[in-house]
Length: 254
Image (tube, rainbow, N blue to C red; front, side, top):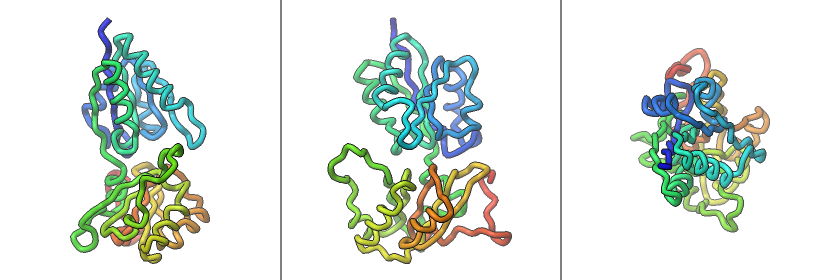
């Protein structure tokens, strides 16, 4: 039997309107869809009834399946000749483990098609009026994970370098470790007054933005109950966010 194809799809940052046309085409003809919670309720509700849809989400420390189990399931279905979709939020190749899944499929001789998604690292800030680059304040942007592989003995992130690098820092999956992240940046020499904005549930009806200086943001986040998923923007561009009746952004469908 000829192996089926595995499709690695990023659904974008939120809602059906941000999903690529190719992603919709593949989903509608899939035999099996392995999804997690990050695409959001609207996308998940749109999954075709003709496909076998399997929740393989990772809810904090509560994992429905391990990564190895997910990949084994993808291989098993593909070897039956089926069209298999691994559906994620944002873009599957940006801290989404899509690269690892691609390698595993290649090891088993299974064809892979990658369908890119709009990454939340850029789209979520910009849809609340925060550009991650700006001619005046940021000629570069650095995107980093706030949740490294826990099996690593030493962090791959150079916090001193990050603290002193110019431009904007965008942190994904950083809510749980926010105090450690901000503490490391201040210890590395970053200005404690550096502006920070946290955008929770970006591009969804219950989106919320929390702003505070670097040295205070972790405490503020705890006080107001910030929860994942959230995008953390560190840098002067965060000052461009506006709230209230005057100047509030009504863009990207929010």
